[in-house]
Length: 208
Image (cartoon, rainbow, N blue to C red; front, side, top):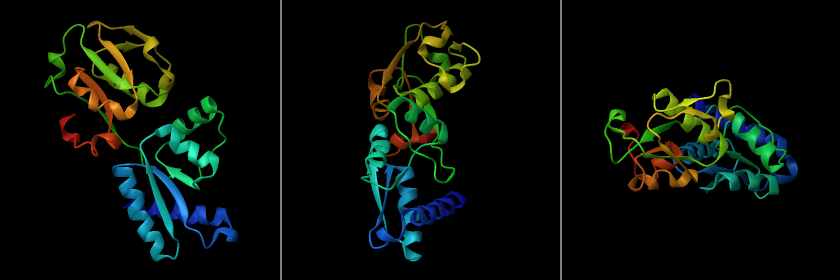
């Protein structure tokens, strides 16, 4: 509920920033499909009760979610945290700013259709991680915490597959579009999946 209230407040703040000239137009907010999109839609209903018309635009492409704000097609987006935004600004030459800290960070997990336990992972098995820097790093860090690999220290969320210093099971790291990692489970042994894509695809978060 606190996250919803913070989002509703962020919508109000965005209204203040857009100015009176757009008062008769709906505030357009792009968001990722699934849980975050549902949260945004619920907050939009709360905002409408306060007299602010909000249109939620759901997109599955995380790059496009920032591009539509940059182009002015929408007024704001909700799907990322500050670290991801900073990386996108640097890598894509954007100049987007964080308007308000809503505090919604979608969790990730390691999923498999082929093994029930990490102990069952064999030498040479393949692991899918997102091919974008931040969530790819989250995947590698989670693999390290699971005891499957060891990463070069001190890299934080700047870590990449090239920073794997120990890979005792010789795991094959496969980088895929974030939306494809859950769908890859028929082909790989293990995949790092963001709940944003898991739930719309019918996956069970408890199966991580």
